[in-house]
Length: 120
Image 1 (cartoon, rainbow, N blue to C red):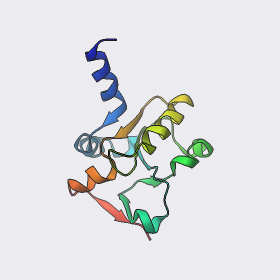
Image 2: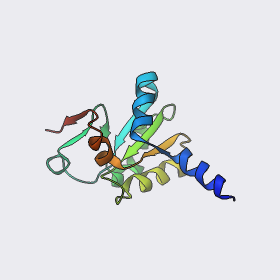
Image 3: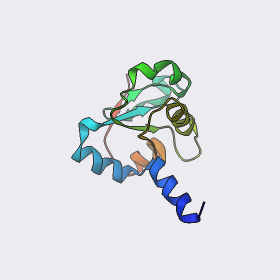
Image 4: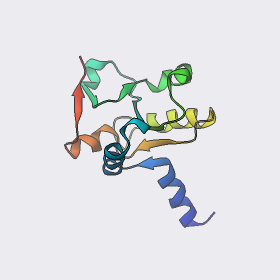
């Protein structure tokens, strides 16, 4: 594998907040955003608007709730968190083909002042 192949693979498995925003504007119904943070709502406080919450430790048991025909975007806290990567691996091993990790997690999304919703 060349270095260019490595970069292509990384790009195929991730999406930046701005690229996700662009895709959501073009094809909102084709994307499922999943918040995989393993924490109660009072700790998470907010999520990306329209995202569903399926904690990483429940992804395997929740496969029947995840639409295989949509691009699935997973996010966790920020760059130091690997919950989204763990959930991504579970989905890829279960045969999901279009699964991306949001680069920088919700921290990057919020740093760009993109839309979130409070969790009650």
